[in-house]
Length: 216
Image (cartoon, rainbow, N blue to C red; front, side, top):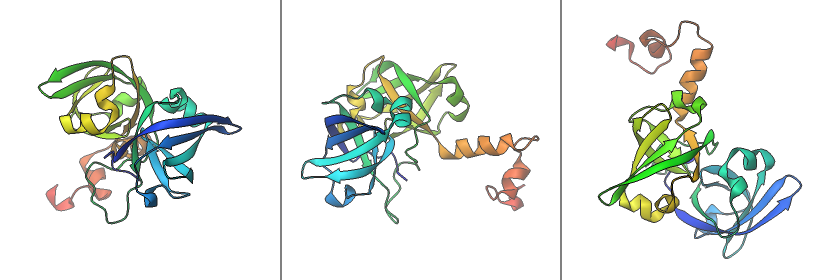
């Protein structure tokens, strides 16, 4: 699990085709304990396993399905990527719970400066729109953000100057592809509704433990 709080921006040093997909070597300033063999690291929001490490960074392998369903398939040598090591038990949860399983690829539609901050509008695959709500959380290229607005094509988020400075979002331009992961709670609520012809009600939420029955 991750939180969507990027800890470092890495640079793809080498990309090699392998039978299973691709091996990606990344120069990164991560603590040695966060890039040991077998550790999980989110790379632009994609959870991958560390398969090797050296003084400059680490390597990970991405399967063909991952390359096809995320932006990692188009990342070339020299590309910058957001990095976050796996959440440690007991560590502060500053963003929101992120699985590292990308739900789809969106496209940056437009960017508007709002003082030192930037508002990004992102066009979203239609299948993801039901999971995106105003004031809800969403992960964009591994960055935890709050949804500001929603329209028929996608959503907007506000990115503060600090986030622009410490992630790759400050270098994104209209037309760029971005990895998207919707909120886990929204995903599970939708799955539950698929098995309940009556839909979700206040009573069913209370029965599931999301509400106090005394408040009904």
